[in-house]
Length: 261
Image 1: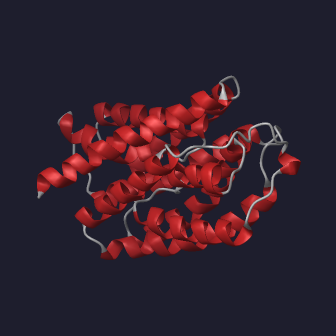
Image 2: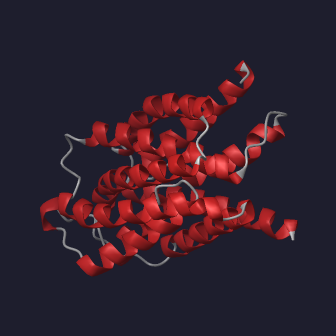
């Protein structure tokens, strides 16, 4: 791997991981298309969808670990929510991570596009103002939380994501969790999901060592910075940033899929 390619991968990893800490996602919604399109556009190696999903899985594991560590003293993580959704999502992501080896590259990209489309649709639904609630006052429907986490785990495990880019809208709109509690708790749930995804991708043989190492180093540096910046921003701004990121990525991936047909 050349120095230029290492720098390119580092920038991709840093950018995605900063966003991860900023809006409470694992970063794969940004890094998946960046890894797929940017290296070949600059004349470097073109990674396959399977390789991109493997690199993403490892990177998300370390990005969310670093972000959760940075948030550990803020008392925003809802541990009961993490227990219910985390238990379901780690099982689903393990199944999806390993099962992805049996899908074609086009099928993996389509799964990604469907997830992003669902996420952006949910994000633009009307929201009830619930950000005034204290963490201790937050309640949620447990069966809905478990079922949604299981489904998200399977589908996101296929693309090497941890599912936070769709998990966050579900928590905000369907479970009605306050934004800051959602961001902190989703990072903890995403970390658990990334364990299943990473193990599944490793079992499937989709993980490339050195590109993953570069992305991990960038993640450890950038994710905590994103979490610190998020504390200074208005929650409406955070939701808008997330919605626009998902919308842009959704449009891009669907255009590419449709133009290939």
